[in-house]
Length: 264
Image (cartoon, rainbow, N blue to C red):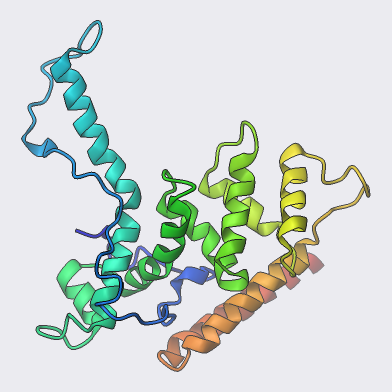
């Protein structure tokens, strides 16, 4: 079963991934018919007995087999979200829900108790997750989400470049938070060589060394990300104009709060 989120738990003002009107390019459900996520079918851990108590000494053969089966099941969670995203896209674009449901959004809400915005997030996320899986088998849903804005604005190659730059750095633990910080540093124009150099300097703590000033213009960076978000909102406004106007009103309120705090 795809990952589930309770209604009302996803999205919110300022979250660019809450745009449920944005769609990935449609694909035929027959295209890539042989596609399979690289998942090793795990043993059924639900039928395994729980250990009586904490063991001592080296693992026995049966304990090692049990550990292997359990870790296989845990590991499958890491790609379950993008496997679900691909499956949802096939159901949506092939209209495979039509036997019992009128729309795809109705299908995911009634069949899976999944918020429709989350279903569209999974669909948007899976191509990038599949692309990154070859270089980052352990990448998780939260990390992919932080890179989606980069992929939307500059392409998947740019998102991969950001991730691999951090991955290649010594003693850097890649987390969603670390990726969020890296994405916030990106300039308006994406040049892979310059971005890699910028991120490498940031990871070393050397951004101020050459100029003595901030290497990154915070306001330009935020403006660039807001511009990308605005284009997606406008693109999706035809499907839900009321929600788009409400979003614009929230942005105006945020702008007023910034002005009030600056002048206070």
